[in-house]
Length: 151
Image (cartoon, rainbow, N blue to C red):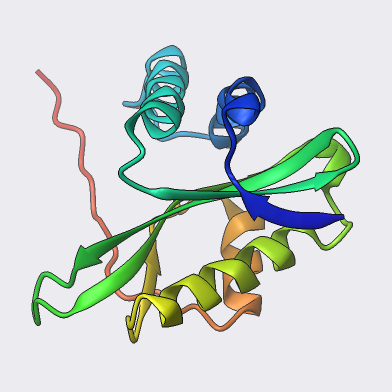
């Protein structure tokens, strides 16, 4: 297994991983089909835009996961931060250290870009991902509160 930069041949594999982001319970007001469609659009945009850096883990010819990274600005300080736009591991890659490889790459990328912080967003209902990120020292900072109003 090794990690390398994205190549055009990875496009279909990355797009197919978009369904991994919708494999969680959503709040009642979220339409699952809309969420799946949006994740698909984001994956297609990522591989088409080249405004971010994408790295993949492969074993032979099999792509087992990827991470998409970009820089952003902290809302409060305007400091440059690294941002994990997406990270996904195939079901075949789970439990093999693929996620750790991708997170290590993200941290190295962050330091190479001279960022002091790395940031990501995760749905509160994604217990597996929350536990994974906390294992790597990530902390919750902002909690988005939602109330659906009856019409």
